[in-house]
Image (cartoon, rainbow, N blue to C red; front, side, top):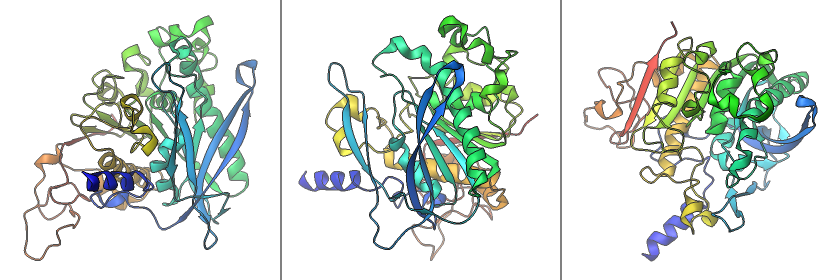
Length: 411
């Protein structure tokens, strides 16, 4: 028992952007050092000032011996307890000098009442692979105060469009990004936000639009005078993890047809928070103008976006449940997500055709893949996915289980 406790503590103190040995091939960190800084932006939309903080992770020139960042944040605890504070170790160096080069821009939108630092498993990892990653601190009201829920429905796509447009201009003027190569990634409520900002046309008659008081969301819905104000230009790829919106018919039956960018949906088929059937599974069928993928963790629920629970979040079930799925191990989820998100962004944002084999032509159910054992093959080798080997490319033998990947071309 003591050995198990020590192992758990050690695992909790590993930077989550550095995946485990059993992660598929493309999950590993890239070759670049990573910097992080926090900037402040002021949005004047809706005739009212809104100050947003944005965390930027970027390829960096890191001085020898520089100390890596330890992130801190908090999440609402079970009432009446105050929010629970936590820390997460990182690999990034605070305010490190940016590396030379023009990189693609990735905008990240967290879930309802979440923290950007809880997504460091993704943001640091992508920055090490040559992306500039901007994660928006949406400053949501506490999830324990449902009276303010409608505010999120309006602010999510507005925040994403504002931050993306501003950074496309400012970072391009400094020669740091290619403004024509943008990706959007969102988890849960952030998934709703990025689908809308990527072109999903909100249905003005949907319960979601009508829930916002004063008709404030209506001008941004399909046919509204401000509908273009919540769109992000030059989106080359969209990733929506456990995306919200289906249960409230956000886009109606055909609003997602307006998304032309390639789309990767990631979800658990036992998601009790946003509903898989009316959510990610339905979106895959509805977004018919997109070259789209649906990665499903079979048996998993909603909590597949925040990575491993920090040590401080492991002492009360409510706290741990922000991070940990009851069935799937969070470290395993992180590795699989990093592998597929890397393949997807490299393929469609960087136009790296070599990544196509990690996404296309796979057997729909990972369990059905075959890789006969041959003499001399290393135990931990990655499937090449060729020459009759149907185990998903980049996965290790006996480590491609419990997943489904669907793919549909635009029509």
